[in-house]
Length: 364
Image (cartoon, helix red, strand yellow):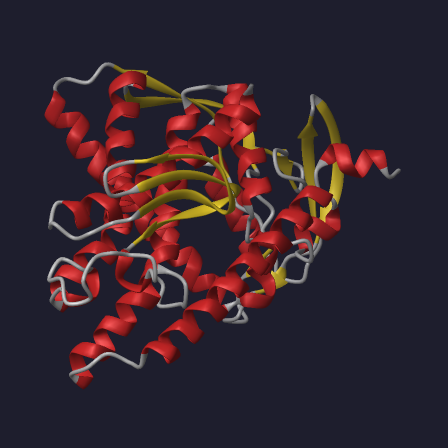
């Protein structure tokens, strides 16, 4: 059931994205002849008065099709309601509507989450500092044996008490001991043990780092919202935070590709993480849906072939040059980009499937 819930969330986000394109076109009177979830052979379909609605075999995305280049279309090529015959602004609205729909959906989910779960009011601190993520398999932390979910309960013999200062104390010890061994006491699955980690120098050559995220150990305490405006305002703050963090993550991926490439997740790993959230706390699926929706929006706005950002780039060239690029050039770029995108998706699926615990245990 948790896996099904995570898959359902991803399918919903794809529907939201494609529905954004679809509604932006139909509300402007632009012809749409296909609305598909997935790629490849059709599994289920329904033929409406003008549009074919279909579910396809490979759930790696979806698409909204237009009759502009459909050789079987009976619509005259000079019809003003064909997408290609519309002004650049109309086409830009249709192309960007999927991204906008994902962002709006992400915000509304945060509003719903805060309305149901409540407003974070206090934090019930527990001893230690939680390690939610190890940044890289080659980081000092990974080499020392630190794993996601570990709790650091002492550093160099100093206990990290149940206090908001514990995280800052641990960070200070790491940053002030570059290239010097640090003794950590770890709690994992209620078992305590010690290990030694040596922080590496960061680029400024003054501070140390071990390549982990550190957050306070404990659980938040929620209260009921005072009014609707409080929920709307806090949801906006959370939404802005997650958008900024997502953009920063992509910038870091581009500028520091070697260290961050292993953090790129495919559909299998995303479903795995979503299933874990659904298993521990169903309400966490709301946050999962919001964050993944923001990621989909940011990915799709990148100026890469086969993505919405790539099509917007073509429109920008058309606006500057005064005419569109030749159709053969656009088709070649888009088809190449689509093949690369599908290839990347298949690679990530294979890689992430091979890393699942059950698969690894099977081959041991």
